[in-house]
Length: 507
Image (cartoon, rainbow, N blue to C red; front, side, top):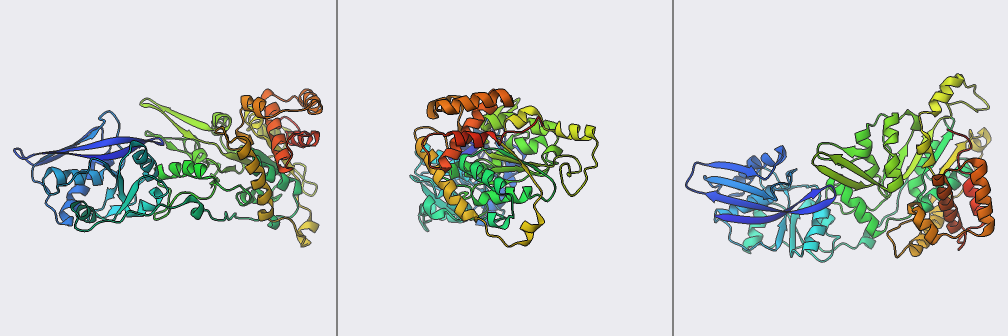
């Protein structure tokens, strides 16, 4: 007898329907075969399914069982096919008689028949809604993840036995209630509050501009100047995730299995801080079956690279295309997979190998050649893709001792959120989220400079040697500064402030 159960797979972030076909032939020796390009983890489903069916109290058919995962040319990864395979065997063997053509099933089985946490539930829920399936049956621990999607019933399945009883109508499973995104939002807690950081007022201003417009920034200063504290305070002033952005981020975390059990979608902007020994694959993503790297896990959030020049040169160079396009494409023989990577890059570096070049109290012992070589570790194209550069002076002892009050992160965040709201309104008919997302074409469409601004920008481009890229990035930063001032048009003062954040020298 033949049974068909609908399941799904994810290729990158894109979900694809997979039909699990189970055929049982009772005039042959017992065997269990899975075809359709299964990986090792899918092959091992044979033992998990066999034990789960027996421990549930059902009979595992002592016949020839053939399972086909269609389409057959799509490689199948992971244990999420356990549940549909077990269900197909019960139907094909005649132990379960029910109609499931309009349902989609996904889940990993334990040996006792209970369901474990499964990756990629959110993209599958979106697929089920798009394809018009009436219900989605997933592990109970993943139910809240899918409950944010409207228009489809989500059934939290605890075990194979509970699903069996539901399908035969003896004990129904109650679908989970829809979870509103507005009820999930919570206050973002950063490691440091801006009020905890003494001095560095200009650096705090740069952080505010970066958060408001989604601009990349580079802190350079002696050890102890506050570079790391400032970067780790940034999450506390970032604007709240919109629902669309939260779904984008959650899809990435869902396919990588980084969503904690029993929780719903990602509610806070990501903050990723990989060590400088991170490999190119760890940063960009990759593998035989390409998975997202740190830049995609930082999507719509912050990627903090401390000790920036200590990262291998080839690793930093791999950031060029993602910084420009907001997407990373990973090519393999079997095809190309793209992951979103729109993040705010915060880089921190010392002025020299010892760190004390320019320090008024400590002497730098580096040779000129060492300093030059150290600066060359960061290429010009990478520097050019960073919107704002700022040198941090050592914090004066007096500022550390005196208990002076400064603005808290909450106060700054209010201005940041107001500026981001203006940008959301301005770009409401596009897919742009903030000024940092603007392309050259978008800049010409949405930003107009008066004669005075054009004259200053022209002079600055000649004197400072601005490239075409840095020319347009300066305009984007100026637009964000104007938004923070709630100004409709960019003024000369906004443009002048944006220009002072360009690098003062060739780094």
